[in-house]
Length: 160
Image (cartoon, rainbow, N blue to C red; front, side, top):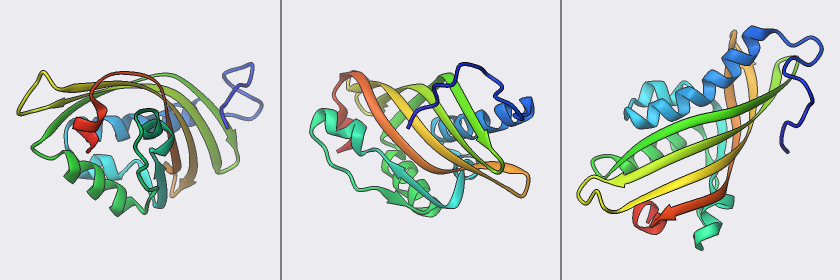
């Protein structure tokens, strides 16, 4: 579920792993904000899953789980292209490492604004539960579950 250990470096965890694991989530956010498909895709394993359902359920939506890196990139970036501007801020990362697998918990504040009508927005404060794997010396997200803590604005106008 969430990383709630009582220390930043549990036994055997390398400081570099903490940075690289958190960087996967930074690539996720900045890749969206810049509409940079290559950067965004670099955050995910090929077989990754992204579940936005827990967050969307807060405003009555029921999106399917996105499966596969290409599906995630296409769905999110093409869904926003030319229509929605985003900014993501990642805070409070907590990491747990076990060999070549890791778990990351973080808070992500995501602002979404319609480009045609900047008065229409959705500001989301989300709690992320992320599973990662180390492949070829790089940490990649394999499963991302996003839950919403609170929001303001009009998420249905942004997400459809």
